[in-house]
Amino acid sequence: MRSLLFLVYWLCFVSVVKARLNRCSNRDKSALLSVIGDFSYPPVFAESFKGNDPCQDWYGVECLKGRVRAIAFIGMNLTGSISPRFADLTSLSVIDLSHNLLVAPFPRFIGIVVVGLLLIGGGCIAFYLFVRMRRSNRQSESNEGLPHTQESSELNEIVESDNKAIPMQILRDATDDFRDSNIVGRGGFGEVYKGKLLDGIEVAVKRMSQSFIRGKGIDEFRSEVTVLTRVHHRNLVVLHGYCLEGQERLLVYQYMRQGTLNRHLFDWRKEGLRPLDWSRRLLVALDVARGVEYLHTLARQNQSYIHRDLKPSNVLLGEDMRAKLTGRITTKVDVFSFGVILMNLITGQEAIDETRSEGETHIVIWFRKSFREKDSFANVIDETIEVEEETRKNIEDVAELAIHCCAKEPEQRPDMTNAVTVLGSLIQQWKPAIEIEEDEMGFKTSLGEMVKQWKHDMEASSSGTSLK
Image (cartoon, rainbow, N blue to C red):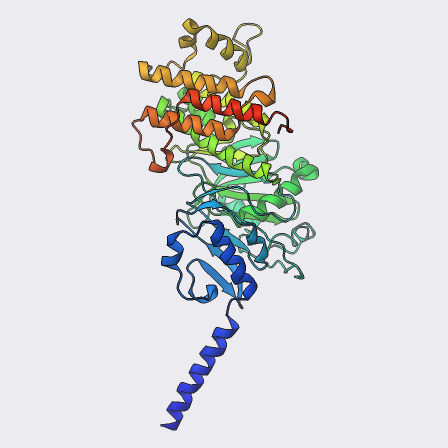
């Protein structure tokens, strides 16, 4: 009997000691309370959290030795801003805030991150936001997940062990030794190959060329590995892994089965595809606008998520034909490029076409002239689009937005937030045959009022420095 009582006493003692060791530090607890306050104390927290110790009783909070290491507040309908107090959680590695309605300001990142993000627009644009916080008085952790080569040592300070390193031989097997027939894309960085891993997952393998690596490639590779290994969201393409062996640097992404927007706008006959109807084109436009808007928000917060190369070939389509954006973003320059994409969607024609009249080879000049001449504008609309009266008015509204986006002076162009609002309103008015998620609706302001509003905002901020 005494032995049993002693055992019970000992187990209780161990439980108490363990609980005290894992008790959340007062600093982390205070920071978490401030974070929740910036979310406007939604009732869902009161329903989900039990007790007073975040490390033991709070839903979505993961701790190690009393320090908060990960936060996952997924689909909790959070509103408000992302608290700068996240930066006080010095042991925090990952924040998952997907499927919420959060706005700027964003907490500071460590360093300047230039990332070639692959974004998918549509739905409520909410992203898994990876924030590598300031870790005061902490030594860099060793990186066991990377091959121990001279090249990989350059990444040790920023890439922690995450089991995403993929041996080169596996990628050779997946792509049939990088056979030319598996190339699905080319760019200044190198080639992209379609492949299949041993578990059957289809992937896109981005193999960087040596000339790209010798330039700025290592910095961009470093940034992509740092951020994308921590980012997981339906609106971001999945990074399955990476490879650093010898002089080889490869990124392994989710494979986008429908390819680029180019295929469906310009090459659909050659590819044996069905042309996109207007409702689908409008939704693709909104997808892209929301992706660019998000990155521009980061740019305004001094986070260098930049694009510089927004075009149909950098818009990828998934199995459900929802658009993903690949590349990097700049602000007003990208607004112009987005306007060109809108013109591509309306006309089904490429940006440069030598068959057009002299002086009108670029789509912006030709499109602007045709739009002013109302009688001839109908002739520039893609012949595959079924144009009824309601469709025609809808197309004209998008055309007007495209022309504003392509204004000669950057300060005369709307922000991407304005473009998202306009397109969202048009989708609500249009009511396309395809199913639209409920959170893509809710816009009640007319197009004219929206245009007036962004013009007013532009004039009000004209005394400041414009983003270009």
